[in-house]
Image (cartoon, rainbow, N blue to C red; front, side, top):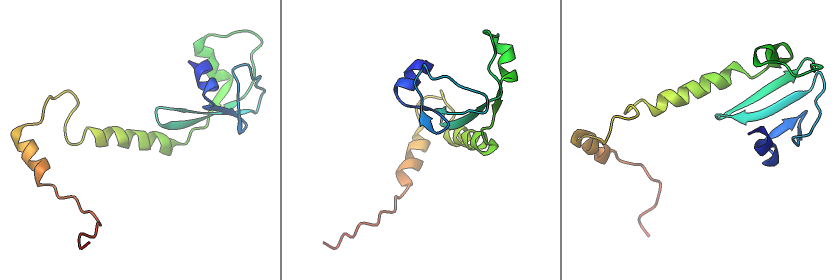
Length: 111
């Protein structure tokens, strides 16, 4: 998955597009986009050997702003505001309410 993201130029290291074979060093900043959030990861240290998933946080620091996560939460809530996911088709009342909505367009119809 990460290799595909590198091929599509979605990952940067210190502001430069990174290939999958790019070496990282302590104090490097890795930036990538996932789930409509731009994540920023700082490399604290590089382990000598491979480590388990539980120990990865020892070697990195997540510097993603909290506002990004709040914005994602608002997006999720806005999608579920009117109708919950999986509730089926709109009812007749829902369709009438949608038909009553007037869209304001700034098109000059005098021509």
